[in-house]
Image (cartoon, rainbow, N blue to C red; front, top):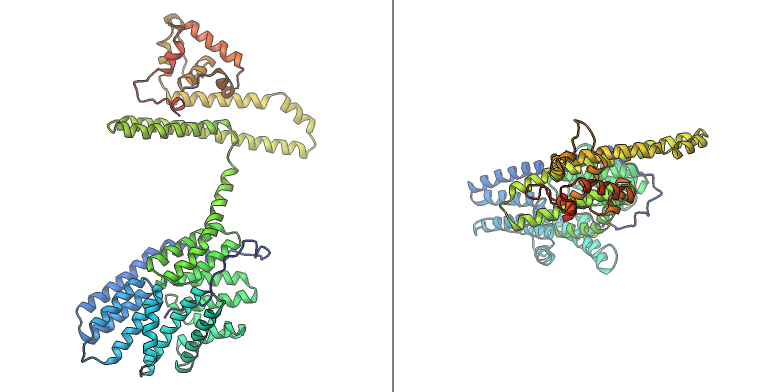
Length: 529
């Protein structure tokens, strides 16, 4: 039997409980692991239900009716539509020579499935019609349980305030009164209802003892365990013990997953609680899983409750991601170049795919080149971040020790800048030669035979070659090249002029460099970006 909580989730502001000393207990990690394995638990339950279906196929009469009712009840915790279907299948097996009480019990099962699915009008019609008939005590108990489920859902629908809420709450409590009068005191559901009543009346210590005893003597896979754990969480919340409140919400949520309960309120309640206390990651994961479960089970009322929380938690999660991104953006100009290269290649790849599907080899080669380019520039970004961190530590250390004059001399000497530039040029050269391994040979084809360049193994590119590598990439403005390489504009002009003087065709040399390798698989990233 599943209790649908008469409470509802409040979409509070995160600052509401900002003064609370919130603690993230180990049960949260256990719950996360349980969620990851939820599919395996669901598969095991489905196998059990499939076995019952096979048994029903070999049965007739009352035995088949009983099996279908069992399947409907199991599905009501997992899938309301399937619960409705098998409740109706049970009714179809009835014949005139079977006891009339079976028809009543079947209608009750059907009404419970309708309530879970949020189809209140037909459920009300069925249960109200049965309330005025003469039925046995056992059937009345099942009727009160079904009405209890119906009114709890309707109360959740209208909220806790207003005339309709008072009506539904009164009917809900009347069902509880009837069940407490007629269920044996040894019955677990009787113990749970009585404990819930103690919580409502504020008798927290009595409720705590009863609920703890109930949990200790109930398997985790039993839905009574999950309901008792949820009520125990409410006890601790009212006592101000928020750590245990969080723990028992997690235990209740875990029990729901093991028991196949997709209509439970514990997990969305926990997600909202974690959101209020800044645990956005877990709140986001839990509320999304709860919504998936509610949708899979077609539990309309629970879906409405969860959807009301989604915008707040989702926006908080997005804000957290955006804040994290903001802390790592905008430090190095190379990162901007990397973005332009990536965007340029992406556009080039898309246009190439639409233009000619036969160019798959070229696309593959271009992707490898991009990987090399990104790898080199990510390495450059990482290197600069490390050096900035080292410089920050050095500055902090010098200031802390009062060596400000020495620090000023060290910075004024330009040693930092020179070391950074040398390392920057080394990485640039490596990136260029990774992308254009034949770059020097290609340049030499444009130079006069006696003025060609020969690099020794391991030797860096000369400033002229480095500048024209950027020309090959599509960066031909002297000012932009000077900015990237930290040369003066006059220096760039002088180096370019020196190279033109060595060219076979001085007037077209720059254009010839841009067109190097235009028939191979090397794209012009920056020019096309």
